[in-house]
Length: 128
Image: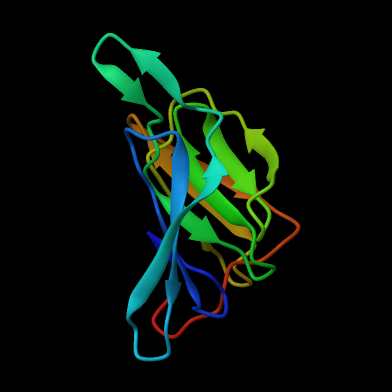
């Protein structure tokens, strides 16, 4: 899960579902308004049932949402529109922005680690 830059939206991965889920976050931290935020391109039906492989989520300073799925790293606008997928040799599981200016997207999965230089930066939060 991840918070939007203004911390008013909580994004939750649904590994078995077709959508990234979002909740509204009230000033007191209460959650409401659960809804399907974005359709995952990695969603497919397998012999075990539906699966998207959605796992790690991170958000950049502009509010774009990055999700590790079976398709790669899917990127969505703050409104939930699909912006594209970063294809990787192995399925990603988790990701985070890092580096001195938080412009490096670090992605791990299936025994591999990737560092991707981006033109954006991750959210600057205390402790991150």
